[in-house]
Image (cartoon, rainbow, N blue to C red; front, side):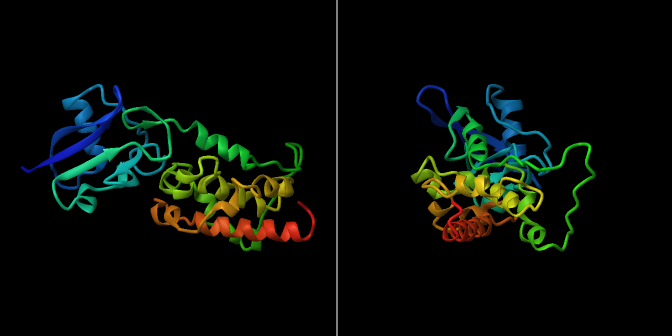
Length: 237
């Protein structure tokens, strides 16, 4: 049985890569590799996971230089040789080893106006949106985002401009701007129209290329740019 030479980021001291030999197996995922290390070689290794089937996104980390869900990434698909490099997601503070602090990521969703606010109360009937309505169709894919942070970790603009709201937060705002039930459309457009908002996106599409759910935050951000420009020309902002 061949072995993988796995380089893992460890955060002790000033931080450094530590190497482990892990048996290479058929249909082995990156999460399998990390779990093997933690259970058999070093129980102090810290990492996150929950569902193991690509539903939660909590196992995301940098695999050979690219942000990925480790539970759905097979070793054979990303590793031509026997060398594997594992690091925490870029653009996030590191808590320990492969575990990142997601607080800033979620704070930016709040800054971008990511909380829905409708006009109906619990006493009203359910507000219905037709699946074929223009607003619903415009965000049909975007609403599937689960906030895993892979797009944020892959975004060069976040790296250059730390206050940039990021693709996930702007994608969320786009879904609410196009939601006919929401009552804060202009507030949301104001929130994403500043220097840290949608116009800071360079449309490099790294977020779209790396999204595990095959969504396009780039498309959502382009939609926001159009909506902000229209509102500005009308003098609404």
